[in-house]
Structures are given as C-alpha cells and as structure tokens.
Length: 226
Ligand SMILES: Nc1ncnc2c1ncn2[C@@H]1O[C@H](COP(=O)(O)OP(=O)(O)O)[C@@H](O)[C@H]1O
Ligand SMILES: [Mg+2]
Image 1 (cartoon, rainbow, N blue to C red):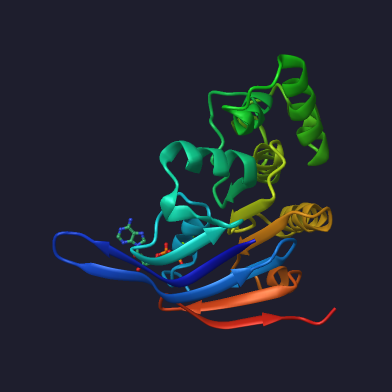
Image 2 (image 1 turned 180 degrees about the vertical axis):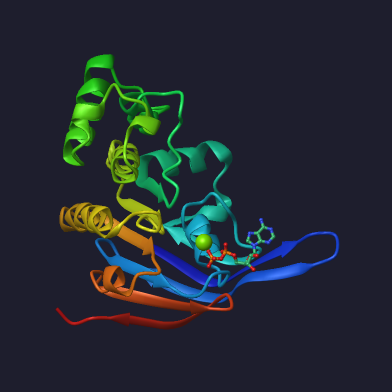
C-alpha cells in the first residue's frame, strides 16, 4: 500500500535544527495493523503526518498506492486524502460548536453526494461506533470515550482504506480504551489498514506488526506469527 524510502524530516527554526526522522525505510501492505511505539519526541507523530500527507519529507520518497506523493499537486493530494485516509487523534479534535452528527458529516466534506446518501452514511458511521443516540448532542455533552468514538465515526464515514491513529487511547480510561481498540480491530478485520501510535504495550499487542522508534529512526519492525 505504501513505501517510504530513506525519508528524512528536518525542522529548521532560526537557531535550531531538529531531525525528527532519519533514514526511514518502511513498507506497509494493504490490510496490515501496525502499532508504532517509542518515547516521546522520537518522531512518531511526524511519521504519521507524513504518511497522512499532511507533512512532507525533507528528503526521501513516499509512494502511496503507486503514486509518488511528492509529484501530486494540491488538488490530487486532497483527492488522495479524501478517498483513502481517516485520521484519529489523541485529543479527539471534534468541533465544539457542531453536533456529533455535524462533526461526523465533516468527514464527507468535498464529497459530492446527495443529502439522503450523506445522512445515511453519517447515520451508519455513528451507529457503527455506538454514538447514534448522541447525534444531536454537542461534544462537551459526551464522555471522553464517546467523543473519541464520534471522532472515529468522522474518520471512517468516507470509508478510508488507511486509518491513521495517533495515540487514540491516550486520553481514555481502560474501559473506553478497550472499546476504541475493539473498533479499530473490527475495522481492520473488514480490510482497512490501520497504523496506530500507542504508549500502551497491551494495545500494541493487539496489532500484528509493531514498529519501535528511537531518535527519529525505526529500530525494530516485527510481525507476529498468527
Ligand atoms: N513543528 C515542529 N517544529 C520544530 N520541531 C518539531 C516540530 N514538530 C515536531 N518537532 C520535533 O521533532 C521531534 C519529533 O516530534 P514528534 O514527531 O512529535 O514526536 P512523538 O510524536 O514521537 O512524540 C521532536 O524533537 C519534536 O520536538
Ligand atoms: Mg506524538
């Protein structure tokens, strides 16, 4: 599905240069469930942002589904994102002023579907993660677990082939974290590729493959036998 070849990411400010990623060579296949682990600051979010095409490598190549990402113009990039990608963040990132249903519908922005189809999709996505009964509520009326499930509904309403989740259980208690993991596993079981950053060894153990990072490098990449 995707290949990174000798990817580097350098952040430059006036005084300092930070190398967030160095020499990243990585291939991830269709249908994989990958956990990315490593200490804070080691480059996990930078890696996810590059995979999600919201950041670009300073050098090196990124191929996604046979397309060289660097060669795509903004319109093609936007198309790649909306047709393929779903993002889930640690802090949910729902919009406070919108209802849950409206937040989920944002996952369909720029999709030219008729109103009836949109509503059906939004309804199905909310149903899928168990927040349909909260459709008309606002994010601050929901528990953290419900908010994260709503955020997952927004991520999956466009039926992405790749779900990128950056510490999706980081702000949740054990039970709500387990629910989110159940949902991610089920989505993977239905064919979605999932790449998830986590600090939880038990959540990482639910993934078939684990990537350990340190100081901007991938230090171990291991796939478990089934
Ligand atoms: N926008 C930025 N500007 C400058 N440095 C950054 C920026 N984003 C991340 N970094 C630096 O890059 C390194 C990797 O960050 P990050 O990918 O967020 O790590 P992680 O997600 O593993 O905690 C860190 O040293 C961080 O301080
Ligand atoms: Mg991070």
